[in-house]
Image 1 (cartoon, helix red, strand yellow):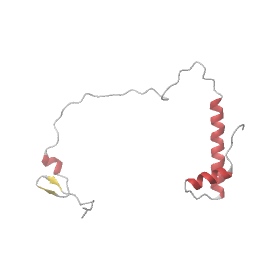
Image 2 (tube, rainbow, N blue to C red):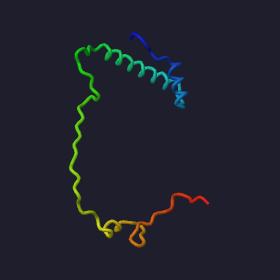
Image 3 (cartoon, rainbow, N blue to C red):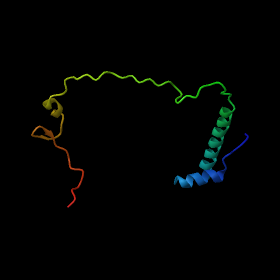
Image 4 (cartoon, rainbow, N blue to C red):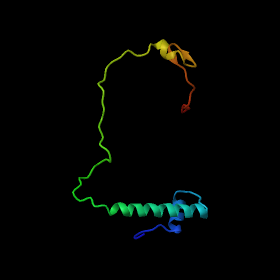
Amino acid sequence: MTGMSISLADVHHVARLARLELDENEAALFQQELNALLVHFADIQQIDTTGLDPKPHAVELVNVLAEDEAAPGLTRESALQGAFRTRAGLFIVPQILEADE
């Protein structure tokens, strides 16, 4: 491999920044995997892209939009049918926020 490589010290430094506790075996495995990625990146950099237009995405994106059409919704009774508690046609849910006094 030519160019840059990741040292064990680099792996430990990044692990410390990410607050990860790695044993020596895990650090060595990450070092190996990261260095393999760098080899793949170096291979990709060698590809001749002369004459190719830059693309914002790897695949062409096409929005499939449907027209907004009004449709009948649920009746109040249907919507409340599966509710645990209701009162006066409304859902009753447990309080999750405390009021400031």
